[in-house]
Length: 180
Image (cartoon, rainbow, N blue to C red; front, side, top):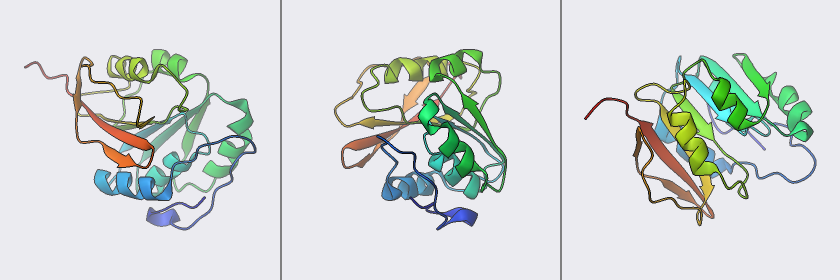
């Protein structure tokens, strides 16, 4: 798997043994193209896996990056991969839900790519939107399977145009805490 853009473009990252669903190159290029310049931005990668999304953000200029992963089988790979980053990637090894509850720092961008069988995607998004991880204007990106659609409303979340990639969809969700 290769980093698709920025100062690390073309660098390869390790992939842990076993089952993993790495983010497609085309998806990463499209998503980061839509985000534009990340210079100095803060970026959080939840369900980080190999760390490829955190590395893409750092490669494109994000000034502060964190990665959260709970799977112990991916720990060594994530640590080995983030050492190539031009900025330090702060790694946390814990459940996403626990990380969200303990959060004290807010981010400009939050990328959340839970395993496709994970049933609590939308509850996690609601928890993120109500947490200290966000401020007005934070953009949450949720990668989900096409069939895991949610048509309801989440407090403080404004849905933007999603992007589709085969069986995957990346939801673009803007935090809007300004009173109407």
